[in-house]
Image (cartoon, rainbow, N blue to C red; front, top):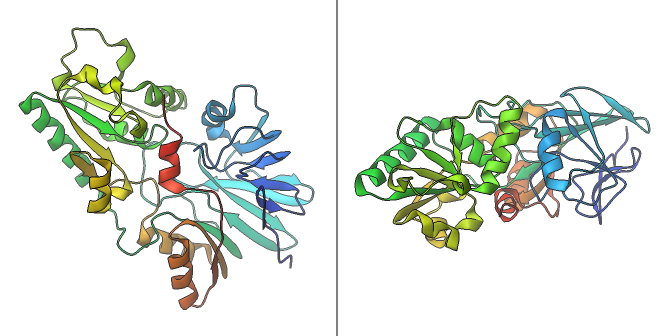
Length: 338
């Protein structure tokens, strides 16, 4: 049995026998990338490996000339004697877990993941392993997601109420993944839908991948005749309070995030409404996913890692928190702008 199939190096999670890194945060010769959010996919690597569905989003993140090799979900690849394969993470389009197998030992790095259904990406698939590296963005028992139908019904009521009051509906969400998931769940019969350029950039990638999204127009191409009071506009958090928002006249603002579960987070965001919807697993989702791996050892990273690791250790697992530079849902927000 190989005990240290992955280790934490200054550049990130490193596989010594395979000589590759998973989601490194400093330039390395070979990077295996779980998904294209900015805290996991950084420019400057000599070569990238990702799942086939994630190539376009990764290229949009790290540059058109990047050297990117792809695999189908479940397709094995031998790297210096290590068997490497990628499995659905259910996080965003093209998100993958990384399975690493060597001399009978199997490790899985989850990246970011969720266990809820999402029409814009392949569902999370549990992978049996000896050691599971899990995220813990929402690793507290207070984080439990309501049914998505309730969330979208709330967004639709807010949109209609704004129309009746004669004001535009400005909805902030992360440009890659969350915005497209929201778009897929909206009822376009209520009114016109517009998107900020940072969102529209990734909408095209999703549509090209065959993901069904309702019609939405780019705000930059809208004419003077648009009645913004009928519209719902999706924009990245970075656009909040910017000069870009003035064109819409009177607006009601809302933010869609798992962090909206906490009232203080809604106040700090200074928005009129908060809708709780996340592309990360909630507390029950984390526990179910970890149990499904059958792992005896769990490394917990980013988010409430210490809390989750302590809880797992109390259940008899060999669990510990490790320090990484991943940031979860907050990191996704920081990377979306323009």
